[in-house]
Every structure is written in C-alpha cells, then in structure tokens.
Image (cartoon, rainbow, N blue to C red; front, side, top):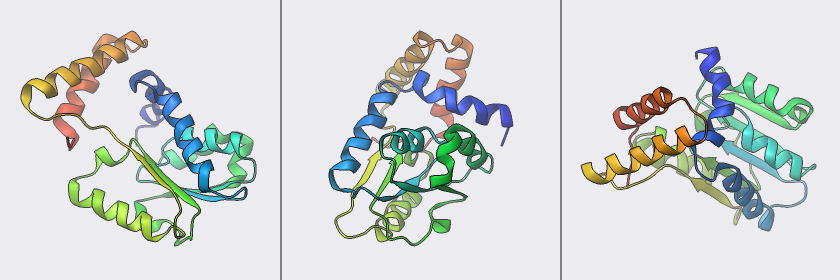
Length: 187
C-alpha cells in the first residue's frame, strides 16, 4: 500500500520482465481470436492498468472488470487508463469480488505466482465459472525449476535483466531476494 511502490509498479514490469510488452500484445491477440467486438473482459490481477490499457487502445468497444488485492492499484489503474477508464470497472479484492459475468474472456498475467497453490486453483476455478462457454482464459505467470542450483541461476538472470534494463543493481538484488524469500514459485 506504499503509494511510491504502487506508482513504481507501472514502470517496473517492462523493465523487470523479459518480453513484457510482447506478452501483452500476444494476450490481446489470443483474446481477439474468440472475443466479440463488444466483449466484456475480466482481468484478474489488474494491477496498475497496463494490460487493460493495451487492450482498450486496440479494442474500442471492449469493456473491462479488473480485480486486484492491492487497495491502491485501482486508483493507479484509473490514472494509467486516463480517458479509457470509463470502460473499466476496477475492484479492490480477490476473485470473489469480481462480478459474476458472464465474460467473453479473462486474463491473469503475472499474478498467480503471488498465490499459494490452493489459492491459485481456487482463483482459476472462480474465473472459469464467470466465463461464457468457450471463452478464452489467458494465463501467464512466473515459473522456473526449484532445485537450489536452478533457482539461483534463474534468479540471477532475473536480476541481470533488471539491471540491464536500467534498474539500480541494489534494487535488482533486493527484488531477487524478495522473490526468493516470498513468492511461492512452482516449476
């Protein structure tokens, strides 16, 4: 809930996640394959509104419901969306507070790795039951091998990419340590 940390969130993913911008574009393409022109899309882990903005700019008739557990991110997402915010309803909380739908598609990008195994499964089930039959549900999350040597290698790569993208080396190492100690990563 630190306002500065939330604001940095909008800047962070493109600098800390390899292929982040391309990932958003591919998710949009996957949704477009089956979502109608006037689709209603559920975004689980809406965060600072980055993916919502990408989708809204490309699809002017789509509407969005976003959920995020951080109390500060709905306001940040509204700021990120600017005039596009009128097409988005942003909710503070977990999947339980999302409208029942039915939705024409859903996304969960770089969110599940923050949840333990049981909550991941529950979140996916709750999202699925809010979808129209055959609607796409596009998921991407952080995952790598969990044996000590592989984990250290992948976390070193993560920190190296962040540093190469302009993140201060001390911040990159702090993020690496935070992931190692806090996130329930699955392989």
